[in-house]
Image 1: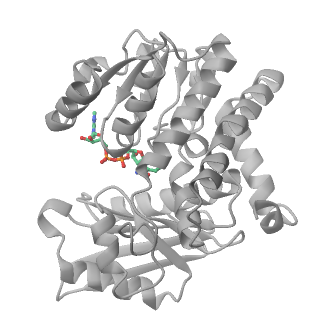
Image 2: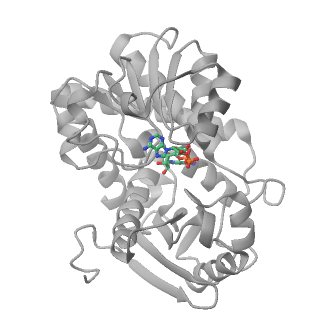
Length: 353
Ligand code: NAD
């Protein structure tokens, strides 16, 4: 299939493909928009079924990054990279170096960072070949894993949603977390510390055990987490949790979590609203990571400034909820319109900065 006719192609500025036979690297970089600044987003490594699935993912994720950075008020554009392969089997130093060469060859049009399947140590290897990388090991650049900041932003977003819906704090509020990996674990800790009652499910039993023993959360079966009888459902695993198949079973009245592309289809935005469920648009609530990455690229180590910026996620969501209540439009559509006004509108770059 040609890139131009791909259903997820949205006037992307650049789509670049790289194959390096020696290391086995097969990767795609997509730049959706650089209107607000250098296109920045994580490098995902995943065992895609085929290159079409990888292309769909990188087109969709890079577009999401444009919306995310615009709403987060940072002067970055939207980009993403995918490496085709199972990180457990195919990741090697040579492959990462070849990825670094690929990124360097784009001359700064795309700035990479860690994502699902890649970590801080991988970014350090990529950084041997390119300076267009963020999220490298702490100490070398003042950077590191942005997951705790993402979790902090999601926590602030959940607080804002609970305040909006129940006019309360998190004490005694029941939250179901799907996925307790890097972000989910830190999120669970913030929630437990504030007195929330947290249920968790994960396909990785080690991650469950860690959360249960460190934080005292309650494990539930994988098949029960989306339909758990809770106040808040927080999807923190992979995308597509809210789908035709799951939406009718959701008992939570708030959906607010870290996962990218939580809505399996665009129709789920209105479907949640029509069921009286308040949805915190994913790219708004999970922007803590890209905000952290932005501060890293600026060499900015002031943690207080970073926190203050991430705290704004709560205010931004409250504004979206209020506009939705006033207009009857679903929250995802409201967020899209707000983001487009920023990155497409006149003077967008100045507003993001
Ligand atoms: P991660 O890989 O560390 O954690 C994901 C967890 O979900 C893992 O423990 C995994 O075992 C579990 N999981 C996978 N499929 C599952 C399923 N079907 N049911 C239950 N659990 C399942 O990833 P992460 O960094 O914590 O990111 C989580 C989500 O948040 C992803 O969608 C990611 O794109 C998004 N996100 C992450 C960041 C960040 O800073 N890491 C920033 C923005 C968005």
